[in-house]
Image 1 (cartoon, rainbow, N blue to C red):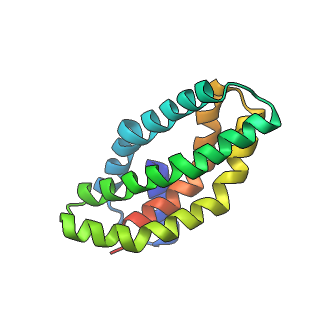
Image 2: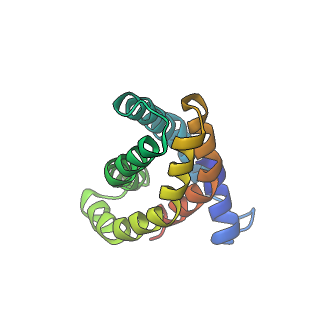
Image 3: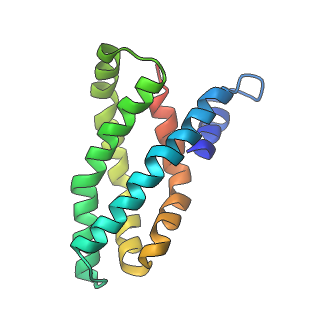
Length: 150
């Protein structure tokens, strides 16, 4: 999350080093360590217990459950959590969620189904979080940018 925020601030928002919001990056690092990593890692363990196989059909089932159930819920928690950490009021946070959530979810569906299908079919459980985090550098850059738009 921290690397994603740094990329977002420097390459997308083009802040430059003098205008970089270090506190924002540290908040995203904390969020990654305290929320994203544990939640996603726990989800993969639950998903592997629910659908224990590694066949193509099992991978497809996992991807559908992940993208149909987990991804919408995760984004629905992540975006307001960032808003809260940024000091938004409940009313402003709700308005921002209503504005940003549909676009974030649609963008999620451009990237993650293919990644997750390959991840669930080809990668052993104990490496899945690492694979996802490699791809997530790009995704986290997008999420940080989206979450910090006024």
